[in-house]
Image (cartoon, rainbow, N blue to C red; front, side):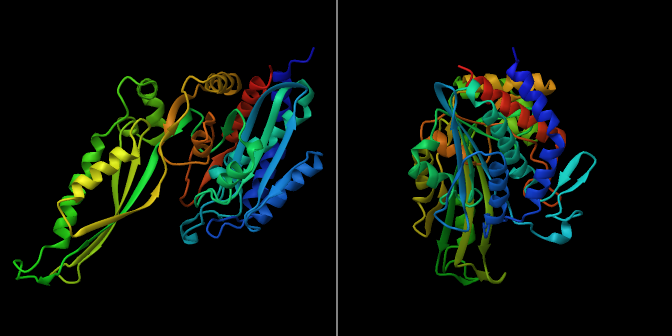
Length: 414
């Protein structure tokens, strides 16, 4: 009798060169967002599925930003698993800062360089090949498998994953797998929620020597900013399963996000990202505008944070603010069976044991969690993500494909 796990591993190993070449071809098709046009990149995905006789459909509320859905049923009833990846990437930025062509997909020293290499064309390619391998073995599976390849992830997902979840119930499923960058040593079961503010201070202003004539807009802004930094005391509840998981995996958190990340990951963070004020050193500034990026962990409500913001600003009628972006923090159970399956199979593939953590940034997985569906992320390291000379290690890319394929096989094995 065939061992499906070994058969699956062997087949993906045999396709290493094919997978690498496909990834390079995908990177060589620019799909920066903005503007977000992924039509050419999607054609490559369509061709891959068509060559293998795998049915799919395109859902495109905006023709420039198509989304693909492929799905199949196994030989027996069972759960519904969804795989999700996106095709849009960050813009290349200043090309003069790149040592490699950002759209060249140059292979060197076991790595592939290019925009989208780690975020997330390698992850999307890994899921695509895993899906195709499982399609070939569908008669042995219980339940069904869905692949969603989407656009518009980098700018809010309104025309991508969010649109699909609102209009296509068949992409909900019972569990989601996503391959955004994490690192082989960490898998994400949740994410912090962003809350962005734009604050404005307006006063009459005056000559710099006539400080009795007007309040100083910068001074007011400084006081308000100081009060907003008190939000760092708002943390996930001590003793919760989330906090315990993060405490137990502090080393993995620091390895994934840099030394010191474990000290802030379960707390609210505050960053004043921009500030504009003043005209001349000898004038009392009449205007000050600043923007604040607040990241809220699971277990801390946005309403509680907003109440504190209002209390800080209340003594200063000169200050107004607007919320420019917000998403609730979200988390699935850190001991969900899919978490255990990902860990077990990562060890089986490469001897690497990923630790469950939460993400500092947002991904499409949050949308499934908001819909009440457990969602988990396991992807390659975020090497150069959003910066010049972004790259992915080929070994990590193949490791991710194998781990996802085996975890999906476990989930659909009855």
